[in-house]
Amino acid sequence: MSPMSRGMKRQSGSLSGVALISLVVGAGVVAGALLWRPAAVQDPASEPSVEYGRRLLRETAALLGPGHEDPAMQYTGTYMDCASCHLDTGTRPGTLSLLQSATQYPRFSGRDGGERDLRDRINGCMTRSMNGRELSRDSLEMLSMEMYIRQLNEQFGVMGESRRQSGEPATFAEPDRAADVAAGELVYQERCQVCHGEDGEGLAASTDMAEGYLFPPLWGPDSFNNGAGMTRLLTAARFIKARMPLGQPDLTDDEAYDVAAFVNSHERPQRANLEQDYPDLTNKPVDSPYPPYADTFPIEQHRLGPFEPIREFYRDLAVSGDR
Image 1 (tube, helix red, strand yellow):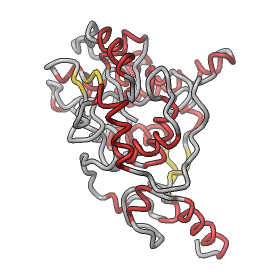
Image 2: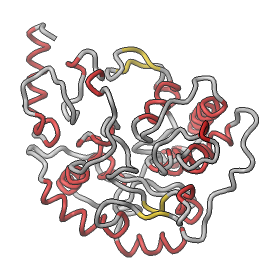
Image 3: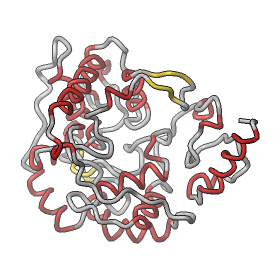
Image 4: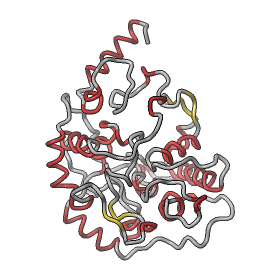
């Protein structure tokens, strides 16, 4: 659901992910996190490298964030890190792992209406999840990120079978109902608020925002924008069910479903021209929270469900040949 910050990276041996986390676990992690500070940004890479790519994912706020001293390097619109969602800087198997991402591209993107490669996908994250702007396809930063992700695929190839296991709970099973935002608020108050704050504002690592967050915001001006994948209810719920609370993912399907709806019911940065996404609207996910749609279901149903009637509509459309 929400990202965790760089402040927890060294303490846990990883860049943790979105932290729907219990008070006991949260307090222990924060205590260790406060001992860590990001590496100085005085040694920028001079050529593409796997290590620089790793740092870019791990220390995005410092290296590419809105507070960078060089305006030309201010690529992201948030002080979160790429690794906020890609746990252990993408090296942890399971949901949102980057270990096998290189093998998945190029591939067709319904959102873009054509085939896209890994660099396109990185820029999709930059402009949506990071609420920023695109990197040049041939930039030092883009090439280094791509090198790092491709190296992770090589790493996966030599991992033993036991290390490839994700350790996640049973796959999220979608409830056959509309999500309950009020019920999600209770889950948030009990399991998430301790880390992410009453107003979802997160917890900064220090007064210097270049150091990022211990627990980044889940909504508000410094969170991901409304074009990001995490604004889709089912995408968010799957992530929450798989990863949260951190270290002991034990939320039920219903809790994950409802709390995802609660988080996504709040205001966040707005991405322009979303109506241009999905040139073929029949490729649009049933839980896409923004119009237009190729159906007449209300926007509230696309945001909260139930989703099976929408799927049935598109199945019938395909059978009829109108799709």
